[in-house]
Length: 623
View 1: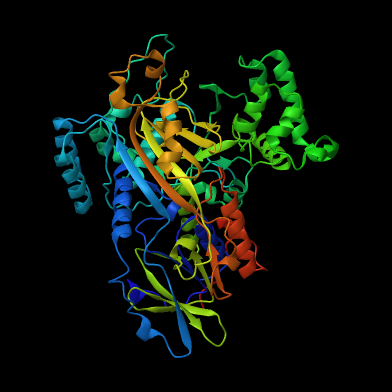
View 2: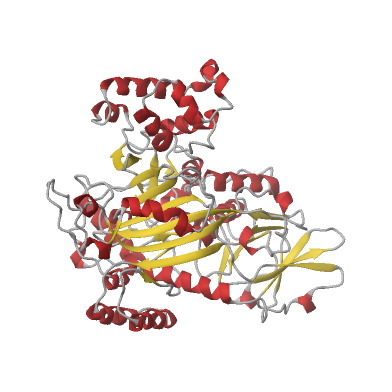
């Protein structure tokens, strides 16, 4: 494949994360010849989504990559560098993920093991099948089981034709949702829907008794692996955010479908409550008194145009937002709702102006697509980079996964990068180079100080807050449980988001790291969930009402979003760096970074303009 690649391009992009994919689409759309490569076997980098066994494969690959030393990776490209050139070696190991820990709490017996082994034998990856099958023979499953097994993964993006100028939001009708689920599954073969899934969207009947729970085993999760789409990074799209505007403007939205986040929750005094968002929700809320409802509406009305009333906050600019809320004579209940569920900010680090802006942004996003400000892409966040990659390919971009780049070639006289040398020894030249941060060597990043994100991915058997519908998409911010710790963002996804199997929920936890991910997030997990094995012996009715934890993954991810270009050593002027995911809820940083870099390279070009109408395309006559 490498021998057939052209040797000259306008732009070479290394890494397929969200900012790199947006840049690839923008460059290709503006007429540039784009080569987009990634050493990984999947799209998205740290923005990717995986099936269940695909995630296990990803974990295994990272473990092997971590254990591998630089010895044996000697450069074979040194003889290809001319006397007038010098090389900037790229990193051979991805070190953006650390402290991975996996726990399985779901039951597993001999029959389950045999069924799982049978499923794994049919897996397209022999290596992964052996790895997972071997794990079954080790021992019977204890109460808490550590594992780090995985299979190889590569999955093309799904796309569903939608409106040319609007986002596609699926119907909430159960039958329509099931038909769409079957259609999307048949298109790529990655999300097969069995006949037994027809009752997926049934309602939960109100009952004072403890509802009967379906028993989900580990082998079922492996068997239904392709029903899972597990994101490495947990994010939502603000309905009035820059990513939504870009998706609609560029018409990339036709490649994806979205669901509205149905509810925003609050965690207070050990209990979970639903936060009223719209005016109707506020006045229908049973959690707020009539006086609180009026106070809340008055404050939110002020936040919508707070810039016009600077005298209201002028003396509190240097204060924290939580201190400012106390001066507004709001009850502790309202202060909690505004701080953690509307502004979704930290008590200590958020200033008054930041809090007011966050509250205004929340309010402005209400009502565009639903009762909350957020929407979520079906099949996970990992679909979004693939959508932009598809746009790049439509306009002539060339893609190569599993294609390693050994070094950047720099001209000594001009100081500009003139090309790359790949793993096959082929030299490919270009005018501009865009590199994901994780590909840079330790020497290039010697002065860089990275932040870390703590992440947890959980599979549970019921929602953290029961309601009439079992198809809820929820967002919850848990305040710091102890002084000095960070607040934790919890996102719960149901099966209609195409991210988990029937009768299960996929839960993402995210916070800034102070320790390992498990140390940071396990206290919150224990507050909200109960391990599957403990429910049989548990006698406390309150504990039994909690969702059962079936499977858990903890890991730390590098956050390079705050690193400036000047922190990197020895980069040529025509090499641009894209950061990995940040800890924020939205995608604004990635979109802004992509647009800024594009304007630096091509200041006279429009960023991701709308594609031409097919009816307006004029083909030149031959001859």
